[in-house]
Length: 126
Image (tube, rainbow, N blue to C red):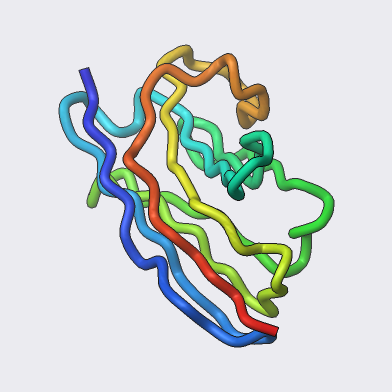
């Protein structure tokens, strides 16, 4: 019902910044929560950040608090992840995901998400 396309990944040095973007289509954008996850080779996919359907609730992985910020624009059908003060351990493929169950708070459980983008590579050099 929805298609998600990530962009904005790349190669940066430690301490640098990147802004990831996810464009959604196929259903009213305001109907679902959005999240960002990441996965490094040989490791489990992990939660990074999420925002609920109306943008009033957000949640972050502890290690990215104060460095990353998630936001959404329901008029443009996009969600972004601003990443500052990047560290080598942030290196991973980043995925955006959509949770079609309307909830009052941001969705943090990976099993709660219904649709996933193709991912975008983020590499941070030391």
